[in-house]
Image (cartoon, rainbow, N blue to C red):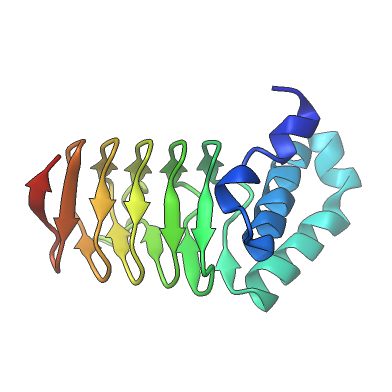
Length: 167
């Protein structure tokens, strides 16, 4: 994928949502600049602007080191927190007030972050915490708390999340 197309890879997934389009364009641009030490130094002011605008003003924590596949869709991107170690597959949907990150263990150490497969829809107010894997083609219902692996092709809901149905 050429550089220009790379920057707009989430555009279609966020049709008629200029806020999400602009956030994801800025995220993809910061990922390009993050590849080499020289560009990190040259574009340091852009990193600060990105962090100020996206995190502080818009309330979306999508760190530059997060690995995200193409076609990410943000619905109502308020209070969205994604840890920098998280891996998100292609064509995923994140809704408002969602938290995805590591878990602090009793000894004070932290687990790895979640790995989310392709074509995963995450409802509003969802927490996905710990060293877990979410399979492909999964729907996670609003308000769910996911702390265990989720197999592919299913719907999970609740606190703690449980499988509602297999697709």
